[in-house]
Length: 117
Image (cartoon, rainbow, N blue to C red):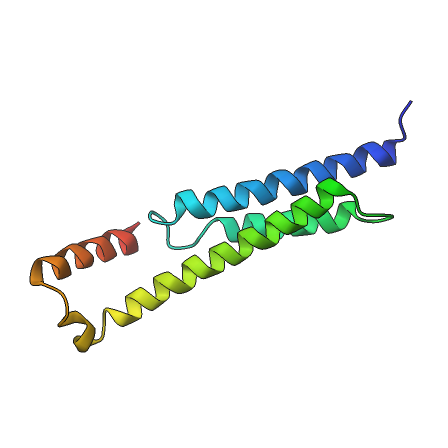
C-alpha cells in the first residue's frame, strides 16, 4: 500500500500544475471582457500549492506548477499594466489628436463596455 503522505503530496503537485496552466489560459481568454486578469489569483494558488507539495523534497510537477504559476502571474500583471497604460494615454489630448473621430468613438465604446462589465 502506498504511503498516504506520498499520495497527498502528489495531489498537491497535480493541483499546482493544473492551477498554473489554468492561470495562463485565463489570462489569455478573459482579458478583453474583465477588468482584472483572472489568472493572477490562480497563479498565486499554483505557487502556493507547489510550495506546499515541496515539503520534504521538490519534484517535477511541483516545479512545473511553480513555474507556470509565476508565468501566469507575470502575464496577468503585464496585461493589467497594458490596460492601465492605454486608458491613461487616451486621456491625453495629444494622443487623441492622432486618431480619426470614428476611431475615437470605437475606442470610447470599447472602454465603456469594458468598464460596464
